[in-house]
Each structure stands twice: as structure tokens, then as C-alpha cells.
Image 1 (spheres, helix red, strand yellow):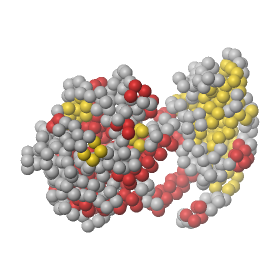
Image 2: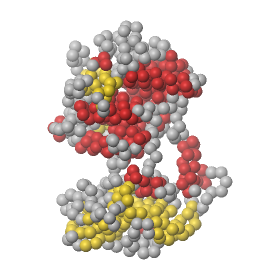
Image 3: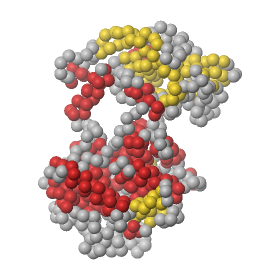
Length: 637
């Protein structure tokens, strides 16, 4: 009942504060199109791009496939990652896996400074045409894999979560050595254009997808959640700077303050200041995605959508061109496509501009979506046809406007995070993290905010006895203790949110709680998932953990290095060695003890982790005098 109550509170908060949940708006249905018509429209677009006679997608053998930029006769990380996104959204797992295998086989660098990065374009036979990466490819690949993990899980032929984590580790391991950088400019915490010494200095507004970083924070499980939240916030702030205050128009490339990049002349093109060309088409759709999925910047996003749609549609809903100067007029340079340097009324831009209707309801919004509905993915009057870029953006827009471009929540299972501990002796993992723990089912300790986690408060909480032999017990799997817990008295009558903000009324209750012995599948022990998958209380709780360490000899002068979400206290052999206070996120090695000795024989490490709202997890390892992980001990049941 407690979990149901918390779920009800969360659901009501989502309604009050306009936080999006699983259901997404079907704009087409609101305009009167039937579900059958909408589904048929999506299926027809998918057929054109992936299965039709002029398709961009091709199977390769029994296991691989690629999405070709047909007009340029190559395969790009852009198209591969877009194809994977279409596949996960439409539940085409075989197509998803094929594209990923081809990308890893032919595009991923297997050695050298670029190892783990992807060449941005190849021939259709897999021969690399360039060695460098385009950062949006890696950005999309990671998000594709995390959404696949959510939708399909990780127990099949491909462990999507592990693949995403490997790619994340790769991009954050690049520090400029040998001229190879991360895809994130770590000074500005904004994605760069290319991870080399030149492209690292500027960005592309269409590469900035705040919603993707939010997905990383939620699902990557790699200890970088705080960084990913910061990247999302920075991307939103950056987009404010890029988009013109009057027109909503943005350049294709800018510096990190949003100022248009100036490029020298090359390849017969004149020197130019970046303007709104083909990359920029994606910006309104990306902003709409963030609006629908997370809604953290809605006021600015709605105003942006009004400006952008007005700039385009005032020139004619059925005729507006596809490239612009910053003031919404004709660009100084027309980017060629299909061998012709002309402006078109492109279905790709109509598609993304129509998606912006999800953010607003101005005089153009509905008619723009109706116009998109009436358009066909076909040759233009000059004979130009782009099943690749036009086609993929068209599919994306249909999915967004029908409510079918989703975050896909995989229902977590305990087996996703833990395995029952066996009789076999365990050891620290390759980075020294201790993964075998005996965990007590959560003790109810209501807290509506983590701001109360001061040192004084925590010492009172952690120093209280909740169950017998609390500081000496070496628990066995399945052992039950009687614990005195705090229960928030149930609110009678309808939910009153003013009362919800008042201090809770508490009563004490004795409950039977069981110990569970697990090997964590991740370096960070997911306490929230431990509780939720056992159908136990997840918020306003206190977790206890115990692990038993055996050493062949004394190991002196080590430090206990831990991270926790939220506050925690740690004891070694009955002595307090470390406390992390305050409202904090889990970061590896966030706190370190003073110098301690792991004694010869048995050592007992205990922890208590307290959290109010939000997720809970921790990680722990020992570090030697040189800062290296200590691994020369065993962990027993």
C-alpha cells in the first residue's frame, strides 16, 4: 500500500506540474485523423525508406544492414543511428541489431588513437571514406542503445546497456592526446562538432539534444548521472543563445556562446558565416522532443516554437523555403543538394517545423501539421528525391506527432541488477569495487527532502538502534530481524498538497525484515532497484549493508573510497571510518576515509544509506597509497 500511495502522489504531482508521463499527445488524432489512418501513414513512410524499391536501407548477409545516403552514395553514422532510432521506436529489433553490427564491424575504429570512435562515413562496402567522427553519430548511438535496453532488456544476443556503457567510457576517455578529444567539450560541457582539435572548438545546435542526456542520466548506470544532468541543462541554455530572439532561426554551427561560426572558403564555396541550412532543420524537432519528454524549459520552448513557425509560415505554409539567413530572409549562401543550388519547399523541414506544434497552438500550428499530412515523400518538381534525410526526418515527425516517439521504459527486474550470491568466493571487480553485499530490506524513515541530512541529523539517525545486534550481526541470506521502523500516518480523505508539504506525522511500528545476499551486476549497488523489485518501500528509507572481507595478510595504509545517493555512514570492524552528509548524487570515490588497515583474516564492512525522494545506490572500494584500487582480498558469504 505504501508504494501505491507514493505512486499516487507522484502521478498527481505530474498532473499539477505538467510533468509528462508515459502517455504522449497524439496531435494527428486531435485533428480528426483515425488511428488506422495514422498507423497506415507511418507504415507507408517506413516502407518507402526501409523496404520500397527506392529504399535507403539494405540488408547485408544474415546479420548486418545499413542505411545509405543514396544521393551521396555512402553510409553515415547519422543515418545508421537514425535507422536504429526508427527501429527501436517501431519495435524492429532485427533491423536495429543488423545496423548496429554493421556500424561496429565497418565504422568503429579497432585500434589507434580513435579506437572506439566511429568513422563518420564509409562506402557501402564498408571501406572508410574518412577517419574522423561526427559527434552526433556517437550521441545517437548511445541513446539508441539505452532505449533498446529499456524496451528489449539486455539478456538477448546484444547487451545494449553494456554496449552503451562501453561507448560512454570511450568518449570520456579521450582527452586530446594524439589530437583525439571527447565528443563533449569538457570546458563548456557542450557537445562539439567533431572530436578533433578544430571541431572541438565549436558546436552544432542540432547536435544538442537535452532529452538524450536525460536518458543517459536515467539509464546509463555509470556513475555520471550528475554530469549528464548538467549536459542537459547546458544544452538548453546553449539553444537559447543560438536561436534568434525575433525569428527563432539558428545557424548550422556556432561557438559555445551561440554566435554563428565563420568559415573560410573551400571547395569553390565562398567564405561565409554559418546560416540556417540542412543540419538546422533538426533543431525544432529536438526541442519539441525535450518539451514532450521532460518539460523542464517549457516557457522558452513555447515562445521559440511560436517565433520559428511564424517566421516560416508567414512566407506561405505550402511554399516556405528550406534555408534562411538569421533574420528569416534569403541566405547569403544556398547550400546545394542533389547537384543543384536551389531553394525548395522540403518535406524534411516541413516535418520538423510541424513537430514544433507539440509545443504551441498559434495561428499556423494546426494547418502546418495538416500540410505535412498531405505531403508525400516523392520527387520534387526539379527531379530531386531524398529518401534518406527527408525520409528519416519525415518518419521521425510522424512518430512524434502521433505520440509514438517514446522513451520506452523497460520494467526493471531484480535480475537486471543482482545475482544471488553463490558458495564461490568473490573478489573485487577489475576496478576494485566490492560487489557482494548482504542487504537488509529497507527500514522506513520518512523524509520528504534530503536537505535535512546535516551531520548532526545523520549521527542521530545512524546512531539509533533499529534491530538487535545492529553493529555486530553477520547476517545470513534469508535471516529475519525485527526492526523498529517509523511509519508516516496515512492521510485521510482526498490528497491535500498543502498538508503534503507539512512535516509528516510519525508512529513507530515493529516489522520483520529479511536479509538478502547478492552479487551486484554493476559496480554501484542499486538500492532503489533492490527495494522496488522486492515490492518494498523505495522512498523515505534507510538501507543497511554488510560484507565480509578476508585478507591473507595485513594491508596497511589504505583508504575506503565510496559514493552514495543520498547520505551514508561506513564502519570497518565496528569503528566509524567515513560519513557522507548532505543531499548528494552517487559519484565514485566521492568520499575517502583516513588511512586504515585491513587486518589479516576477517574484516567486517558495514554501511547505512539514507534517502528521502529519489534514487538510492552506493559503491565502495579500497584505494592504496598510490591511488590504485586494492584487489588482493576475497569476499565471502
